[in-house]
Length: 318
View 1 (cartoon, helix red, strand yellow):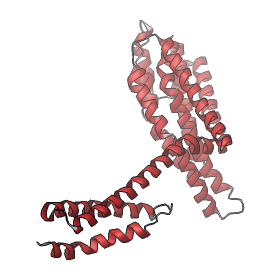
View 2 (tube, helix red, strand yellow):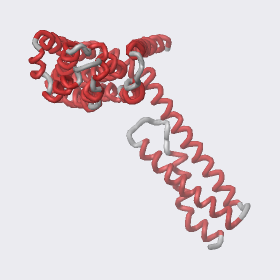
View 3 (cartoon, helix red, strand yellow):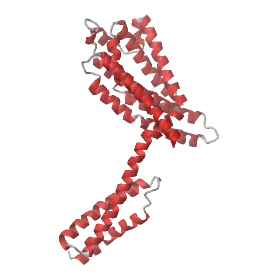
């Protein structure tokens, strides 16, 4: 194919990329922006292929110079858009999420309170009557603790103390969030159920003289995971509040606004869940002095408080 035919064949695609670069308006935040970026990336890759062919076949010509400039402009547009998107994500986790959580602080404390009250109730009942633990936890969990109660405390089954309780914490968080649509009833149920589970199991471990080891296996990853569960519970309660108390807005508009805010809370927990999972997988099982594990738990708690406090300080300085 000679150069003139090559130009005629692909001129439409080049013009489309030209128009998109001129009128794409990638600075906006509307829903169609992502589609424009995807189309820009497709055209960029296509025209880059045309540039490679033109360089090989036609050498240093005006066509090659034009395509080189067009590809460079498209590359710049893509790079700037991606950089802005990355900065928005960083800004969300450093400022947006802490600010959103502070706005929902009352719901966060209600969520935590429901869990803690349920924990204390099942803990107290099980400490008083060990056989009542079966009212809160499955029989196989108790059997596993009984099998590991003979001998040294180090015989405590890590898979029961940790994996059984927290492996599905992301699922628990998502359920607590999603069940807000049941007017909060499902959210409260999830929080109560998991509070009962942890309280009864920890009391059963204490009754068998394994409480010290038990909590050293739970707290290092349990502090951030429980924080995330409380946040997800607050997100579910936020959805429930938007449905039950729409205020001056229609119930539909109130639900849409509340759902958006709740989703931001849920998304903010993802990195914390990941970091907690890394802690659970690589640090918690280490055969080290339990005091080090308690120390890491305190560091996690301090880091979470600092994260929220630092975000508040930055927001005030803006």
